[in-house]
Image 1: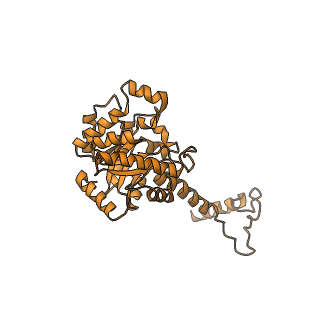
Image 2: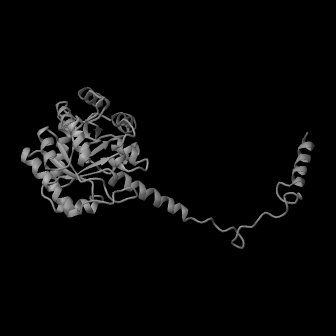
Image 3: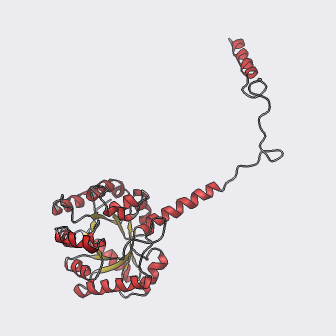
Length: 315
C-alpha cells in the first residue's frame, strides 16, 4: 500500500465529519479482517498485538499479559496486513513503555515499513490501583506513551492514542495527537467480551468529559469513542446522540470479532442444516445387495476372479 501522508488523512477525516458522517476506525488482527474492513468503508485500520490474540479466540486483554513481545508482534503482523490494504491509513499499536526499544528509531522503522500512524497499545491506561501506581513510580508509566505520541507527531505520523479520563485527554492533546480514542474498557458482548461495564449513559458522560478536556486544549483535535458497552452500531448511535462534538467510533472486537463469531457460526449452521437427497425409487438409500465374503456382492471374490480372467484373455 502507498504511504498516506498525515495531512491527507486529516483532510479526509475533516471531510467525513463535515458530511455529518462518523469517523470509523477498525482493529484488524488478520489480513482478511483489514481487507474487508476497508471494503466496508472504514477510515482507519489499527493493528496491534491484541488483534492477534483476539482472532486466536482469546480475550483482548491478553495483549496486556506477558504472552509475547508486543512491538515485535505488530511488525510481524504488518507483513500480513499492509500488502492487502489499498487506500486506508494503517496504524501500528506501539507499546510506548517498551524498555528494549529506542523509540525514535523504532517509530522511523515503522514508518519505513509503510505504517501511516500509531496508537498507544498495549497501554498502562487500562491498569489501575496499586499496580498502576507502582508502574508510574518505576518508570513504566503513561507519560512514556505520551512521549511516544509526541515523537510520532514530529515524524508526521497520524497519531490516534487511547485516553481514559480528562487528564490523559489533556496530556495527549498537548502532545499534538490528531485523534483521541476515548477508551471505556474491555468491550462487552460476544463469546469473550466483558461482563462488567458501564451503562451507555455513563459511557456517554465519560466520553463527553474527555472530549471537553481535549477541546479545551486544542479545538482541532478529533475525539472518537471505543469499548465498554459501546459494542454494536445501535450503541454507537446512542452515545453519539447523547454527546456533543464526538466525531466517531473505533471498533476492534465490535468489527472483526463479532463478525467472525456470528458469521462463521451461522454459515456452519447453514451447512449443518442440509440433508442428503433421497435415493430414486422408494425415497430411501438401498444397501448393497449380496455378501462381500461370499462373492455375490460388489467387490467379492467371485467379482475379482472374473476381472482376473478378463485381463488374462486380453494377454
